Image 1: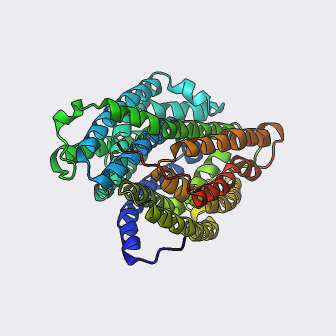
Image 2 (image 1 turned 60 degrees about the vertical axis):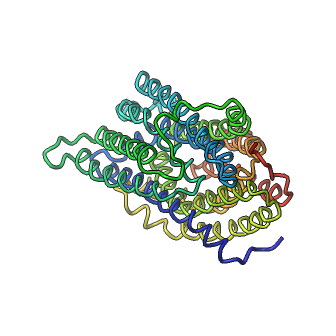
Image 3 (image 1 turned 90 degrees about the vertical axis):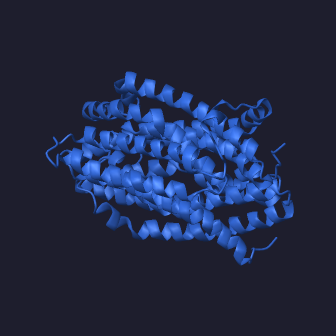
Length: 454
């Protein structure tokens, strides 16, 4: 198998990847502005840490939504290759109802026990108190967030990607403006600090939900989805969703919990100079920026792979997979360089003490190396393997690497050996190179090709 040279292939890839990368850029900018504005406010370092830890339940919900839609997208992309719109409408209807149930569950937990949830992540009374305030407001955002994020992912599977850009632009503008008003107390409003950041995010999330629902029912012509279609149900498709979606849901759910456990480990480090949580938040922001292109290409790979298998052209699917795998190496190298050389610029945005800044620089160096492997994992696992229907292998690999390597090694490094924080971070992220090598061998084997449609 050789690298595909057809201009049509790369044009098609970019038509999907660029809007997704742009959407991710807007989402990243929203999160970055939250951290920068909180970091510039009075008592900014504590608020930054509290918002980072208080956002963990929302992060878990987002990843669960990504998992739910990821499994469904495998089916949707292949039915899209067959142009079977009736099956796609039924999948949309079932997933909307499922996402709504999960959203309500997370909202109830976040609103009823915010302080108890925060105590899982930190034993600092100030951070726990601020985080509980943040989470007590963000719980309302849970009611809409999972449905809207899941629908955006499903629309990607049928190559409707422009709507997500529009939604995120509106959300970004609202969030930044309301942060400026409510965090700092502008335009006559009181300075609400971390509560202002939470209210701003809540309003932005609700606006996303309203826009995507109006688009789905009133403007989208590709699916022709109507309000009455919410009643649709299909036993065979439900069985397929459970069969192919459950591994992805378990994968993302247990991965999110693992990452949350790692955040808790970082939040309980009490021997470091500087604030590890604030430094890690800054490093993560820079990694997210570098990963915009990675996950844009990964999503394009999933859609193209699923559609090609749906068209029953397995030879072409393997050639495309080889091309995507080789691209992942080059994109990973560029991402490494970008993160490494932007360290000082990124840290300079924040009004935090010098010890935390130096800690952030060291952690960013670790993240730069890890991101090379994240590129391979993202494009090969999320793109090729999942798009090809190989969801169970992905589940075993991600869960095994994180829970048998990343989590225990991170705990050992922090709680037992009390190593410097950058070494703790490296121990936590050792699962990424492990997954990268496993993905390379799996893609090369061709065992990932699955036809999942009926």
